[in-house]
Length: 90
Image 1: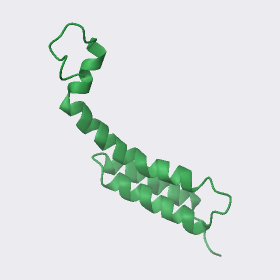
Image 2: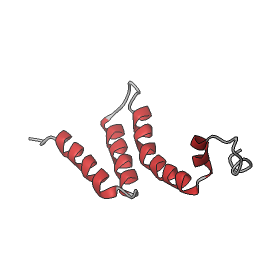
Image 3: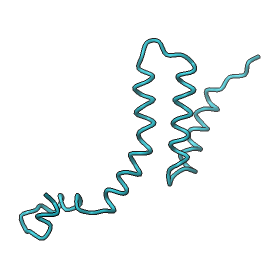
Image 4: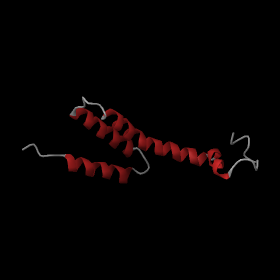
């Protein structure tokens, strides 16, 4: 719709962003950051979760963040959370 009405005055300005390639590229990059968080949220809602599920979720979140443009900031945040949860064995 955006492409067929791109030069038309009938298309509201707020919808013109849908025809912008940069918008879709940024949206895809942000989706890659959010996806591991969504997966972890769904996985950890079960009643029968184990420590393994939690560790797997942290690993997937860390890997997803590490592959993003904001990797330095995001991985630092995950490491801070992990260190806050880590307990000495003895």
